[in-house]
Length: 266
Image (cartoon, rainbow, N blue to C red; front, side, top):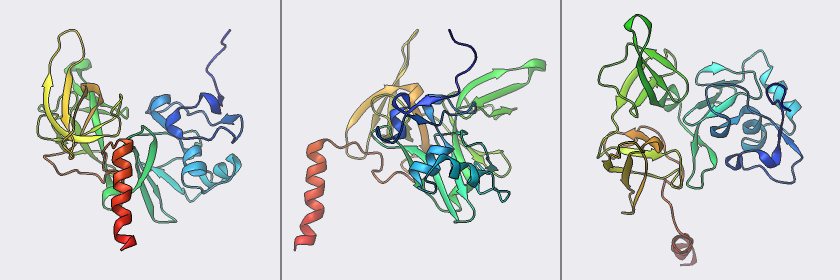
């Protein structure tokens, strides 16, 4: 019988998006309570130990995070909890090494760290998940990283994307979820893919379906909850992963490799 919240996690039950090896031990770090859900986040301990290779053991991670210099910052704030949950679009900054990373998904649904420039590390994109009116008739919106913003622009609606300045925490700009804009898929079978929004099918009493077309001309569709607008028109506001959000079949990957090897042989 359960008695309180769980504090441990076995490696075999960890999300597949963490890409942990089966033979690395029995246990892993369970994400702490935070702005992202357990299955949609990755703890700082796993990032420093398995993604960036800055630590060999969990003890090393604790020493790095406990340093008074504040080595690791997430969205511009120093984090010392080794289980702090880092989620989609979060910006990780390491001042000593002058490195900045943005957390994204690849087309296989795995977490990746995209290296970004200092100018891009000053902002992040968030998706509006709720729009309500609180006590005293104060309008507010809630984002996917648990931010609550009061008195938003009346033109901002659910599923739109906000550009947040990490230094001030204020909304700099916003992107509408509408046809012609570039979007990033954050869930479902097409997770990690990037394409242009074509049109939206409305289904009363069910999920609305959005049709997307990628740069290779392939069409696919997904639920509107999985759509994350990242640009006005074809231009993206953030740096995309190395695969540019394009899903390739096994045959297409083979042809791409052969095409790259031809100039080397000549």
